[in-house]
Amino acid sequence: MASKSNGPALVAGNSYYLPAMSNAGLFKGYVIDPGSVGYADVGRDDIHTVLITHGHNDHFRRAREFRERGARVIASKEDALLVRNPEVNVRGLFSWARPPKEMITPYFQGDACEVDLYIEDWLDSSIRAIYLPGHTLGEYGFITEDGVLYSADSLYSKELWGKYKLPYSIDPDLCRESIRKIKTLDFDYLVPGHGDPLSREDALKAADFHLSQLDFVDEVVLELLREPVSTESLVTKFCYELDLYKSLNNYWLTLVMLKGHLSSLNHQGRVAYKLENYCMFWFKSK
Image (cartoon, rainbow, N blue to C red; front, side):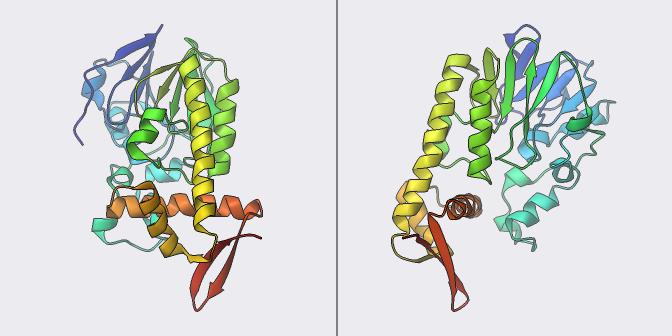
């Protein structure tokens, strides 16, 4: 995938970011999430470490370029398998069967890369890791000594919600926990995985909006389940309700998102299910 970056932009101190389809971070000898930008885009040859926030290819697709030049690659224990073998993501989306190639989202395709060290076993006092699961099970963010938080896909701005309407995650409850954690962190600027950097004040507003949108999705689902609805019909009704973009990729991503919200609502006792004639039906609990 071609780079969309015009070079590093200063955030604060030694903390930079490279604007791209998926933003990359740059701090001293670290590059964070080189998914849409490569070695040539960074413009320096002192990169000793690649930090990967999570195992989606738009965040690590070009990590191998840096590793081939001597940098070590660090990812979480949970997501390292996805970095080493992107096929796991592809198959997981299709219930572990091999999907037709037309159904594979490009966000889960890319170059596999070996992981040299786990985030959990790494330590640097100038940049620390913050566990922020929900988008994946092993997502982390990184805060530099300059007060810059690289939050990856743990937090979506209002603008991003407006553009995509349903940004991807797998566990809304974990997402909520991570967003609430972000609100307690000591940072001055937040660099998201997608979109422009935010001041702390704007990041806190984005956090509240993200939380409200997760609640909104729950309410839409509950409204659609006043009568029993099959999983497939629920996807259709939900997509029409939010006027989501019609594509194979979006269908699969929406299906995963909906299953996450259905599971959450079921654990809360607000949604129940039944299997009838080999078809799963969901309905609002009485």
